[in-house]
Length: 107
Length: 120
Image 1: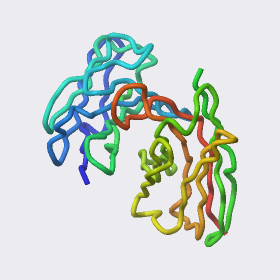
Image 2: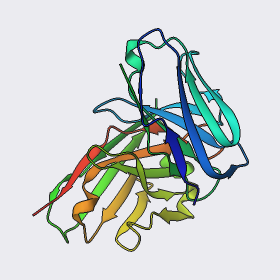
Image 3: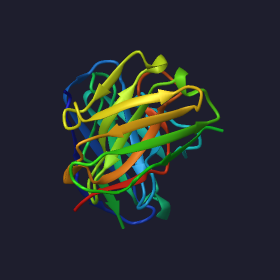
């Protein structure tokens, strides 16, 4: 199975700053089947990005995804207070689909 | 509007059984892949079980294989997770989710979750 390693584990930033979250796969994700989710305390995960770079419905354009092969990035420009949460990547290129361990974005 | 509502969580003793339900509305359950994902307290997301469209194929994480069974009732538009021989490490919030609207098994729609606590 493909193991996804997210870094950093915790990212401390301030509103207005930009954030770069990394997701590295143990094997190449050949069909660009990588998604990102946001989860706030006490809430279910919410889909942000699918297919590496496609934003889900209603997701602000300050969220963007990029990458290929084994290295993927979620970029959040101009952090808003509501963006502080935990972010997970997920690959669905290879069965079983797997999640990364998460990156906590804190103020 | 797509909505998912889990139910059935609760406190159960080790070795016991529990059945979770995920009621779906706004779409026909049988035409989409579905997944159960769990999250232990303070931990990350772990996929538990998935079922393909038409219930042709089912998948289980190694940690639950042989103990959990995923199924769906088309007439009730409801997804189920039968959990047997529960262990303390099965304690988690269990979410059901539906595949997104584009290709591939990414999870575009999530329920609010139901808490399962396995403890004596």
